[in-house]
Image (tube, rainbow, N blue to C red; front, top):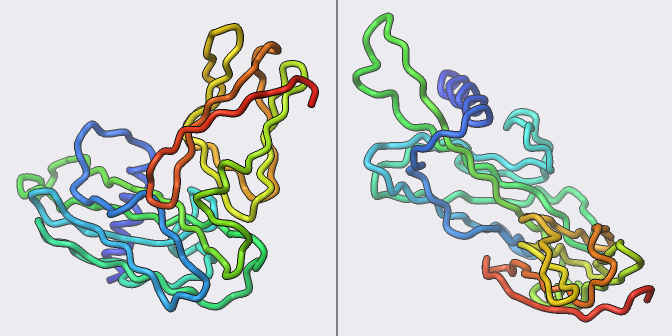
Length: 241
């Protein structure tokens, strides 16, 4: 087991340093994980759609992408931490909350990491042969959701508060839920300007600011809901409001 951990850790470094054009064999069901506080556990299904077995290493971090499995202090137990998944087979990852105190008035976000380590090629088994083996790493948001939060997570995006002052567009999230913006555009004088790169997440009670044309009249944006779907909305702006 120690040998497997060392190998997986070394390949984790490779996955961070290289951007291979090959396809990963391991596919995760879903784009995010929701953990209701009252749940005993949640499961995440991973499937091997490749032609060869894969070694899967999984762990949860607290927001630092460089955090290793050994260095993580996330309040969850994840089993199995390492597993072999045969071609055409699947593996259920069980996520169990340890009970460590977390805020009860808002969501807390963590990250689920799944590292797909392909097998050593047979032709690379000879002594003195050099080869490059690359691992694929997926990183999904994991939202710990307390009971009794006001409103509903999938309605949080429509509660975002957008204000314009000069060329500064501010968006505030007054809800207890995280809102992920897939993209956003500012519309001014009939022209749309992309103002939001993919993947920005607005935490509860957080405010973000962007530079936009001062004549912006409307913001069109897409958010991602609990099911991974993208929902488009638009908001009319009043300068200086």
